[in-house]
Amino acid sequence: MSSRLSRLAVLLLVVLGTAGTAGTTAALAHSRSSLSARTQHSGPLSGDWSGYIGSGSTRQRMQITVNARETAGTWRISASCHGALTLDSISSGYHHFRRHVASGASCAGGDIDCLKRAGAGLYDAVTSHLGGSWDTSGTLKRARH
Image (tube, rainbow, N blue to C red; front, side):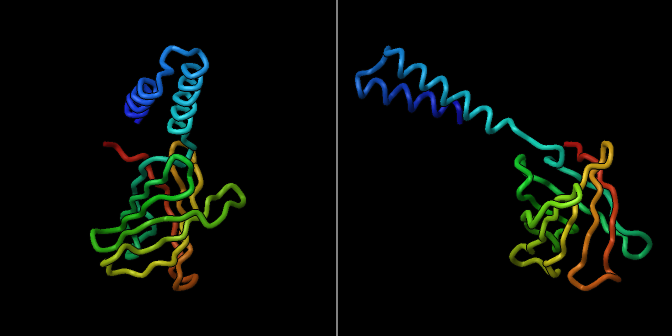
């Protein structure tokens, strides 16, 4: 996006006939550095995580991706059970994300994934929409690509 922004700025400067003015060049440089700073920011929860939550017969493989601003993401248990995450609240060091089910998925949404860094991992405590007996947890590891 930075090179696209640069090409657009150069074209605009040529069209307006202001190429070479110090003020415009400084403004463009500031604009590029601000854009770069915004896109490079990431928090400790951001990125791709995978592992298992639960135990015994309730053990499930979980994949979670959290965006750089830690306000949204995605979750996946299987090809037929996945969707989006939206940040609901933050308390006691946990980010509480509400699960939304993707269109065509065959599972229920509404669970809350409470995420918190645990050393190099990401602890996921799930509060089920079905009640306490379905609550589960586990620590996910950073996914390798």
